[in-house]
Amino acid sequence: MSESLDFDFAVIGAGSAGCAAAYRLSEANVGTIAVLEAGSTDRVPQVKVPFGLLYTRGSGRDWKFQSTPQETLGRRSIEVTRGKMLGGSSSINSMVWFRGRRDDFDNWDVPGWRWTEIESDFEAVENRLKPVALAHPHPLSNGFARTLGSNGHAPPTPERESAGIFHLNLHNGARWSAADAFLRPAQQSGAVSVITGASVDKIQFEQRDARKIVLLDGRIVTAKRGILLCAGSIGSPAILMRSGIGPKEDLQHLGIPVQSDAPEIGANLHDHPAVGVHHEGPNSGYGLTINQLPRWALSPANWLLRRKGRLASNIVEAGAFFRAAPVGDDGDDRPDCQSHFIPFTTGFKGRLIKWGSGYSADVNVCRPASRGTLRLRSSKSYDPPVVDLGLLSDQRDTETLKHGVRKLRSILKQAAFKTHAAPEVYPGPEVQSDDEIEAFIQERCATAYHPVGTVRMGEGKAPISPQLKVRGARNLWVLDASIMPAITSANTNAPSMMIGYRGAKMVLDDIREKS
Image (cartoon, rainbow, N blue to C red; front, top):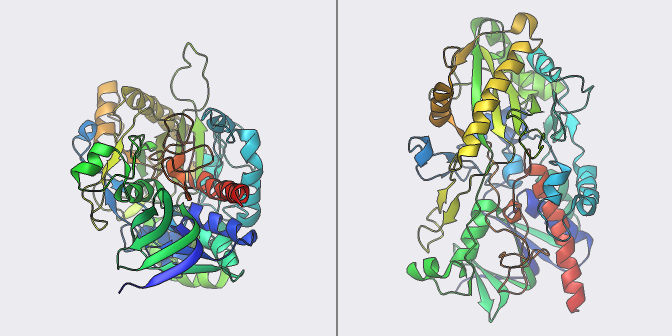
């Protein structure tokens, strides 16, 4: 007989949104709360040490999803990195903090989600996280941060062309994830139980009421008052479809009983497409060289004793927002590209870490037009879903990247790198024509690890209401980046936490109306 665990609420996923949601529920004193996480603890050095993110991606703390072969990228499969541990992707990312543009949220055109309505939720989240500027950036990062005019000591902003040192989720030189800021304080209430190793198979319904969660190991979690699905843009639609909420024909083909025909579940998948430009040369950035080996050898002690040095770097230290494409007839002059600057040598032909010294920067499309889909491979939860990112399926994204590569090269050339400057080695100065740059993009384009949109919220036929309720079900809400109608113009970790925090308030408002 399977073990049964009874709670008032269950939060599926202890990632960025799930931790924030659990915290807000715990503040409201609404009963017992189970937080279900498929992964394990985040209390390991490679998570807490900022530089350790190199060793978490591709590890057992990463879901390691892969896209389908992308037709526009020479049929390459693209890594879809997602955190699989307490804190989710906030425990595996580069800790960069951006709200996005104000008009990103206004342009969603969803009641309750305009900038003036959500700004206070961002402020509440930031009061707990307290993002700070990287304390000791490399001189190269400082040089990059001074491009695109004066921005003072402020981080770059997508509201205008700007560059700067990034603000990060750090406390005393260590990663400060959503689990640190929200989940552990929530546990102190005594109402929150965190269950790791809890892979969700499906949600069970009584008529239309979501009541039980079936785990892969056979355990049953009962949530008497409601289920908050916070498994992210890959996990949330997959769980909904395995539970019978999704495109009817797809579910029937896999033998899944249909609870609600929701054709848009799994649609609208998109991410920031990105491509990098690499420079290498002696005495430029951090890297594996003879003269740098002593400092690398001392770096663990430097971090442990002083929280300084190379291991205190989040690797992605600085960045910029800029307008790359010509302003169109509509007068749109918003920054259309974001760049992340890395003062380290990183491999661009297979290996991530290589011998030598150098630096790189990427260019990302802020508001991509391309869209992909997510579908189930089978009804079994241990089978990863079919993730088609649809990268560059809209030619406009390729054109923006081509303009972006040219603009990024210009910024790198003008940056005050002084004696640390090094020549471009990839794609290389010989790659200049439109056709050559486009071929380079097709060869190297990947993503910024910001998948969104697969459970779009909105009015009308959107599968999720503006109050984040799942249409066709009761007592079930989705609170994570999957509900975004369109991606924000920068890194999506901050909006994900805001969605979890604001969404929990909507859940509380809903249950109070019922009582």
